[in-house]
Image 1 (spheres, rainbow, N blue to C red):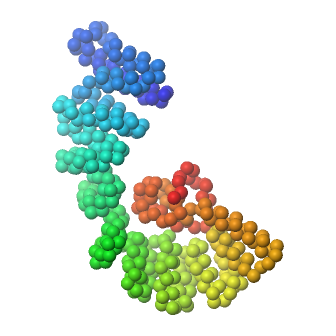
Image 2: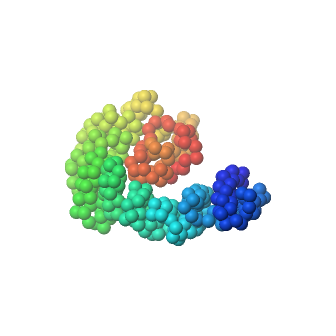
Image 3: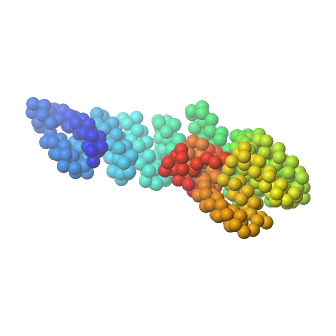
Length: 397
């Protein structure tokens, strides 16, 4: 309540001053005194009746060229406080006034469009932002909001159109975003078994952003679905040159390809090379599986223990405990079982991915961060990073 009081007192003072000045002109109040409405609104504030106070101040601040900014500020305040209906009412009232000049009306349209977006009325917001674009006023803000709307509605063709226009208007590259829009189109086409359209979309994605790991992974997945395993392996090797942070994401497909090719030694050599670039536990665990199948649990334990000494990780410790439990009886087996339960509980609450921009944590990979809405910012986490430190209150999904 006190915060609202301090926010509205300047507005009350400004509105009262304007009302008093108009009153002087109309000889309604003599000697420069404030109107009774001002004191009535102030009294509402002091008696913790902000709703009634706001209504009084709105009535006092009759819309004209001198009070437009006051109304815009008040509507913006309501929107930020979550009172979207009031914000919409104020901005609609502004737009309906014939006294506004062209720029003032455009500013009110922009604010009303943002009100509609906050209320989830995307179709109404879209029409207002389109109108602003045609007016050639506040175009950058209008196009940025349109881009948000089309992404929310998953209309990737329109997202691409708006992104292109924004690039032309601002000179800032949106190649990363456009690459993901093409990837979305490719996934839609692939789900409809339209392979040609999907392949073409992925080519365009990589043309926009040659470092687009998502496009590469999708191309590899399509090659595997066609049984083209050697081509899939070659495609997956590109990730090493695109973004090493995503190298572990290639492991399931790589393992499947080499298994289909019946070439375990080639897989081991490939993994050994990957381990030089990616010291994360994912690569080491796949290598440990191969060592165990070929040389037994003891050698696998030695390999994994050596890796964990240099690069400790809960997932690796959990696997080491399970390997150690094989062939062990009695009290040692019981102790290892308890350790396995503890590491399992730790893994159950662990987030494997984190956004590099806002810190949002997730258990699965999202190409678009649910927190800050940025693309390609969520990446696999490595090592013993504490899930509860750094970013308090950020959700895990």
